[in-house]
Structure formats: structure tokens, C-alpha cells
Image (cartoon, rainbow, N blue to C red; front, side, top):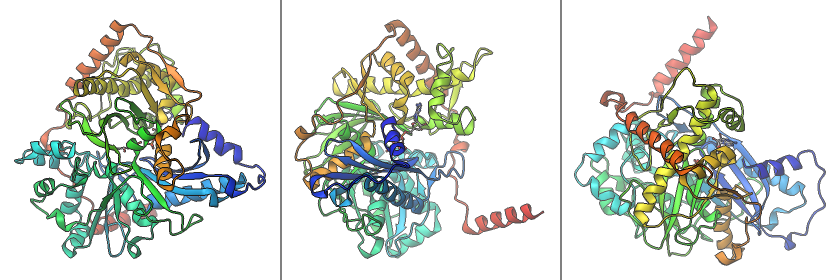
Length: 560
Ligand SMILES: Nc1ncnc2c1ncn2[C@@H]1O[C@H](COP(=O)(O)OP(=O)(O)O)[C@@H](O)[C@H]1O
Ligand SMILES: O=P(O)(O)OC[C@H](O)CO
């Protein structure tokens, strides 16, 4: 949570009810931000300032090495709690919910949910975008005839990252998913589709939609037509006929009707009018509307999006083509560099290695040393994503000596994201033929000034950090606000979030910066090939019976 939002939450606690403001004199837009580690609901005024927020974390489930799941029902509950929490603050401050004109949704992308479209019940946990259980399956798919043609259609290469491999794994391995498929009741969706379906009350209304920024992360969508691609569906249908799987209708990112409305809670009846995958949303929130503008969001992972205008650019250097937004049927595209581990590396030091209890303390620890002391941490917990796409690496530290302290490890963890960003910018320059002159940043990890200074030093251009860093949520509010007529065009947003920026200018000399990066590149090459074929074999989920047995054994054990 960015500092400014923490202040808003703290200010309100324990304060008296403020005098009521006439709702006809105020206008607000709500934004659901469903991220990888937490959900939030923010309420923005027309200047793009958040006036109320509530955030809640939910369970991260890691059943096997490389597996990462979420409970889809818990995600919905966390969103509902956040709406109630933020609304309480909002009303305590004297505002009325009647002045909230619409709600937008932004969400973690690729994460895959399968549910029964008759009962509305999820059939398995959501498989999270970081999950690498499909490494062997991805290799199998890459070896099939025609696999090299897919990226040109959908913008993404085959890897464990897009939703398709997750769906195929669920069809192969989860009995309930197979049964729903056989019965013709299997619904597949990313988190945006699941949330809109559930927030609309489930099967009764059966609102089943997704916007193109989310659909472009499944591999199923033709990035030019914004429709499901027959060629892609044919390619992936060799074992299961994917046309038998219900997939959401692809709609515009701003729409007055398609997303329906909230059917329960204090905002029951309020319309959902906007939807953007979180990285596209951050680009919109950073006002990256001109071709050539870019943003880098340091959240759980880190994602650099570069606006390429109204035609997709299919990367030749390890980047992805994605939809930036589609407000009016004229889609705008981005080149994307995706880094799997950013803030999750910081959390790993905290939760798994017990380095500290708070994220900012990791930065403080990193500041206790002058430099990385020769240590390089290739944080390939999910393999390495862009621009490398190495799926047979795991996290590896190079250069440990008797000199190495915890501070060096903290520093190397922050630096790993900066190195990958540098590699992505180099690739982007080759793909686009343009060199960026500055980079806008946001996301939790951008709170670390040390990390942002290192970033500026490594890429050699100024890093611009806005004061209000909830730009992801702001993007979805802008999408909903466009549909609701709160804002009419980008010009009206010119002044939003411009005051109080911090600019990190490059300070390191060129030779030292190049030397650091060269050492990183050597480490990346050396991390390749760790996972042998037998390590990458597909895992199986625990069968229901086995789960029960394990539970009983545990209970009996604890009685002894
Ligand atoms: N001062 C800080 N230094 C380093 N990392 C930080 C700092 N503040 C927050 N983070 C990291 O940022 C991440 C949360 O960012 P956020 O944008 O909220 O992510 P998401 O939207 O993916 O849930 C966490 O992993 C957290 O450890
Ligand atoms: O949770 P974040 O902010 O790191 O974003 C997750 C991305 O959408 C995954 O593609």
C-alpha cells in the first residue's frame, strides 16, 4: 500500500462522523483492485485522488514446489470485505454512496479459474500466474507442429505463464473439471471474469465477460481482431475440444452494460462499468496514452508496458504483445516485459528466511552495505520471464563468500528486478527502434528509494515516481469513469497525479553500471539448466480421498 493511502486509512480510524455533504455536489468512482497478494477497494474523486481505501490480504497456497494457488471463493469474499471497509471510511467522512457513479475492476492477470456454469461453484483452486507446474506441458506444446505460429496471432509465446497451460493441466488432472467438461458445463475464466460473474450473483444472471487486456493473456485471443482465434483453439484442442469449454465474451474495457452490477452488500445495484488487467490499468493510471510512453509497476512481479499505438508489435526479442486498453472499439497496444519476481522476492526474505517483519526493513537492511559485495541473486523462482524465458532455472545466488552478509542478500534481491528491467528496456529498444527518455514507476516496491536509484543507475534515464502510487486502481476507475461520463477524454485527466513526483536521476558512472549488468548476465547464463527433465515432470493434485486420509492421520497424530 503506498504511503498516501496508509495515511488515509489511519486518519479515519477513531475520528468523529464528519458533517454530511450533499451527494449532488460530489462525484466519485470506485475501484476494485484484485492483486496477487491482496485485494483493495478505493474510492477516487474526479481529480484522481483516493479518498477512502480498504485493503485485505488472502491466503497464498503453495501445495508443492513451484505450485501457487488461490481460493477463488476467498478472493470474492476479500473483495466484498474491502468494499464494505472502504465505504465505512467514505461515509464516516460525510460522503454518500449515491455520489459513487460506477465501479471499475482491475485484477491479477492469467490466473485461471474453472467453475461449473450451472452451480456457479469453482471446481478447483485458481492456478496463479506464477505457477510452474506446467513446465513439462509447455515443453510438450512447444514441440508440436505449428507452435511457432502462435505468437504472431496472440502476442504471447508458449510458457507456463499464460492461462492456456493452466487450463489444459486442470482438464488433464482434476476429475471435477473433466466431469464438467464432459457434461458441457465447464466455464473457464481469468480473475476478472470470475469476479464479475460472482459479483453479479453467479448463474442466475450468468454475466460472463472479460475485457481484451485480460483475454490477451490467455493465448486464445487473436490480438488483432480481439476475438477467439480458431487457429489457436485448433492447435490446443488435440486432447480436449476447447470449443466445448465456455469462455467469456470479450467486451470493451469501458462499457455501461456488459459488466452488470453488484448484487449484494452496501453497493448493491451499483453498476460495474470498467475492467482492465492490472498492468494495463497501471499504464492508464500513469496516463501512458501516447505511443512511446511507458510505465514499470513493481508489485508482486514487475511489468514494463510500452505504448506502441493502434497496431500490435510482435516482439523478436523476448517481449510480449498485449492490449493496453480498448475503451471505444479502437484498441491500443503495448509491448510488455514481464518479470515474475519483484516484491515476492522481498516477501521471500521476510517470510521464508525471517529477515524482517516489514518490507521497508528489507530496504533498510540493503542500505547497511555499500554495494552487493559481488553477490548476484537470480530470483528465478518461477523460471525467468522476459526477455529470457528460461523455464529450467530456479532461484540461484552467485558469488557467496565469507564477506557476504544479510544486507548483501537484501540488496541483491532488489537489484535483480532492476537488472531484468534493464534487459527488458534493451529488448524494447530493439523491437521499437526507440530509446525511452524517462520511465514512470509505481507499485509497492517502488516505495524503496534505494531500488529506484539503482534502477536509474542501471538504465541511465530518470525514473519518475508519482506521489500517489495507487495508479493500478486509478486506471480501472478511469475506465469506469469514462463509461459513466465522469471524464470525457484524456485531456480532462492531464493534471491528475502530477504534483509531488520524485525524480531519480542516474548517478552511477557508465563503466560501473555496465560492469554490474555484465555480471548479472553471466549469472543468468549460469543459472540455466538447473531443472532436469525428471524434475519438470507434471505433478498431480491430491485426490479428495487422499486429502481426507491425510487430514485424519494428522488429527489422529495430534491426539497421541
Ligand atoms: N519499501 C519497500 N521496499 C521493498 N519492497 C516493498 C516496499 N514496500 C512494499 N514492498 C513490496 O511491494 C509488494 C506489494 O506491492 P503491490 O503493488 O501492493 O503488489 P500487488 O498488487 O502485486 O499485490 C510486496 O511484495 C512488498 O514486499
Ligand atoms: O500482482 P501483480 O501486480 O504483480 O500483477 C500480476 C500480473 O498481472 C501478472 O501478469
